Length: 465
Image 1: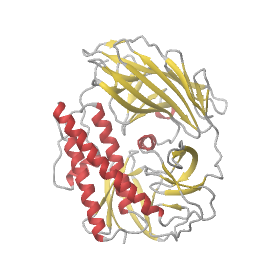
Image 2: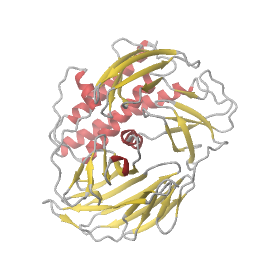
Image 3: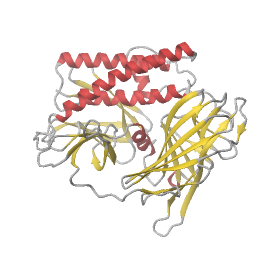
Image 4: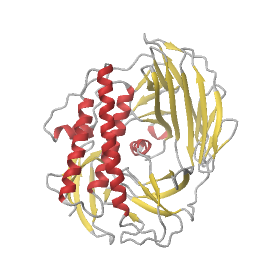
């Protein structure tokens, strides 16, 4: 399998960050894989930090607003500089690591401060074991969350549904929400009622989906690792796979596969199926010792898609499987192998991917965002009243049903107290949208209407005073 052509990889969010500062951007060919993955995570964290900082229930004072805007602007500048590079030697990569560390320090602090400020107006009154769940994504979410309860204690898990887009919900762990459990066994099978996966003795994973209402189930796979030599030739490595059951449910089931490859490298894949999820998440750990590259391959005829995802199909996008990842480095060959790059330089690294059976009207891009930006949960004190109640989001975005619109970026306007929402239509259809700014716990607010062309971008200014 030959590597695909070099792609221009600068994102829409970074393009906005550059344009607003009057700095034209010239996207460069793709850097090492870890740089692209770190860039994707940084973009998600910067957007979440902006959401928490500038769209909180109570607006920041002008001086704090200006200071936060300057910090985020500097972090965006650092990210754009990284993405504009064309030299990837050792000194440059070390400088890039320092740049990502500065971005992480900024976003971690703003996210910590922002979640605290958001929770100041929320209520845990009448709840025995309250838990606050934040949703960084721009679509409503449900899922299993993991959270700490006390220092030194193991984390707990809880299933939560109905967390609003770009919002927060307070739930009571003493009243578990109903969900079909997830399970796994020593034979290498994982299931949650919606999807079923099986790991064979070679460490390869087969995915079965469908089979409802009398229809025959569809099997996809196998998913496996594939070594590509430094001259572009394929190698079929012999695997000494060890399959280990990590968790048998009921909220999360997990199986780990460790394999030694012919080239002297090792790879560990942890397959995870959560209760209520439609995905199989794949967490990878690689110790790469080869001059070539390592790919996570799905041996089924396929095609690549936008938004950090790719899908394989049995005729159309509604009857296939999407492969989602922490970055969109994909390729395919004439033999029907579709693969995600997971290692391209020696050393240890990690990666994240997910397999998602598709369905009619299912938003692949929204699920890809959910993979990169998981729900965030905090245990709270019980019995504390607040004017916002148990569910709050700063705005509601509704479309006329023809298209799909996401908030691609959030930034403060020139004057403190105003925020610019940058919107992107992702379904390829003309759409009319209504955005309602929520002003407080009574649900009152302002509405704005906007029409967007298929695949278009637009910006809208919100006054949050």
